[in-house]
Amino acid sequence: MTERFTKAAARNIFYGGSLFFFAAFVGLTGLSHSYIVNTSTDKAGLTDAVARGKHVWEKNACINCHTLLGEGAYFAPELGNVWLRYGGDKDHDGAVAALKAWMAAQPSGIEGRRQMPQFNLTEKEVEDLAAFLEWTSRINTQSWPPKLSG
Amino acid sequence: MKYESQKVALWYFAAAMALFGVQILVGLLAGAVYVLPNLLSELLPFNIVRMIHTNALIVWLLIGFFGAAYYLIPEEAETELHSPKLALVQLGLFVFGALAAVVGYLFRIHEGREFLEQPTWIKAAIVVVALMFLYNVTMTVLKGRRTVITNILLVGMWGIAVFFLFSFYNPSNLSLDKMYWWYIVHLWVEGVWELVLASILAFLMIKMTGVDREIVEKWLYAIVGLALFSGILGTGHHYYWIGTPGYWQWIGSIFSALEVAPFFTMVVFAFMMVWKSGRRHPNKAAMLWSLGCSVFAFFGAGVWGFLHTLAPINYYTHGTQVTAAHGHLAFFGAYAMINFAIITYAMPYLRGHRPYNQVLNMWSFWLMCGGMAFMTFVLTVAGVVQTHLQRVLGMDYMEVQSQIALFYWMRLGAGAIVALGTVLFLYSIFGPAREERPASIPADYQPAE
Image 1 (cartoon, each protein chain N blue to C red):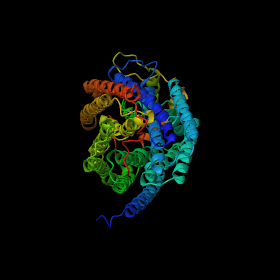
Image 2: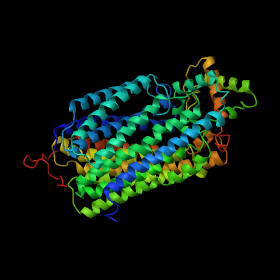
Image 3: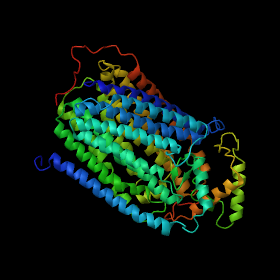
Image 4: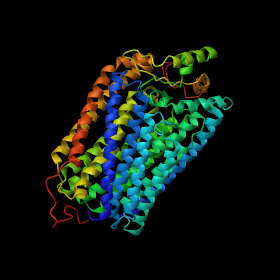
């Protein structure tokens, strides 16, 4: 064992194996890239409003309280499917109006309840954010989350 | 300490520990906001608190890695650093960038994705700093003796820099964004960081146990091999629910289940070396941190990762407090503790003292580790309850949170214990030391190899 498994052999296995697995990983993410662009996300629906909404989401660091598709902080509700919780799939304008009202009412100031900051978003920014959340709700996530509650 | 230029590590360790203090303070605040939600909510909202907590962690760990590299590379390469001055300039720039980022966060200046909230100019500065570091250590290694430890360390450090470049790519397609985001986050902490961790641990084992370098190096290759073979495709466990194809559920489940292997091997390695050598190194505290690091990395990154890594389980637990429990113990066990180990080992040499304040240091070990273990347990229970109420019964998020408030109180208590351990650690490292090292034996305790 000692003679056959030399340090040189260990080194070659490490570098060779790592390169192999990394190449496999890059190949698979390449496949996934085209799957995401063409199949699992709404290519035609990725409008400028959605892109702007994503920027609003990032600029205000929403991810550091909420989760989005399960990733982020765990301090506030999951928002990957919030559009469906708001009933946006049935009543688009109603959901946008509800989101506007919600954003305007923050922080609630209720004692003992988690506070969402007032971000002072313009009307258009909230509409863009709604477009982003609507687009996100249509990503094929293999039916995650298990419940509407997120 | 054999080489004068190793001294730069002292400044790195000091900077890392200062930021570690910031991380713990802000973490305590975050834990307090969980149970007292109105605390500072207008002045300093939770998203900013959390951003500082995570960013401080990443930056101090990196500064600690840089310091460890500057400390161990001269000894390994048997030559002075290429440019100690460049190393200090690099540190100055990095600390300035980190402070600028934190102050910016306080004034709501941030952009981008989770953990990558830095404004673009700071990201660019990070790249410049990384290039300075890589140039400096690579030149040092090239002119000196090459060892497996320096090779693996360099591969790890180059990997960190290369994968960071993905932070500049931010497509407007959220699924694509998330997929490439993990090229940084996962391939760092479950990939190249493990190389850095394993090489520092191997260095400490050679120095403290005096076991033959050949044996340690073969173990090192085996450990980092297992880490990358499992860890690279293990990225798949982040690709279950973000719009990626279904095959990731199989690949991710299988390979991430194997991610326990390198950590288990590390435990066996560390204890075997110590047991085999039978040598008693005078720096018992450094030995404790080294052995403890392997054990806590195994539980935090290995076992707690495995708990929710299989796709059918992850479907329910993803993004709950189970994730938070795993994240806390994994970062602490694997990366914070290896920093404490190398710092505890190196500080007596850097300050020219015999190992000092060891009892205090070992108390801080038990306080920090006990606190973190308890925090992990309560967050795990909280996560299981949350998973059931929210993901199985479909209860509303905020309602579930009020059901698990008790666990958040216990987590805050655990955090306070960790903070106490932190204070003890900082004092034991930077506080007064009584016994000077006699000038006649400048580099004792060092094995002949």
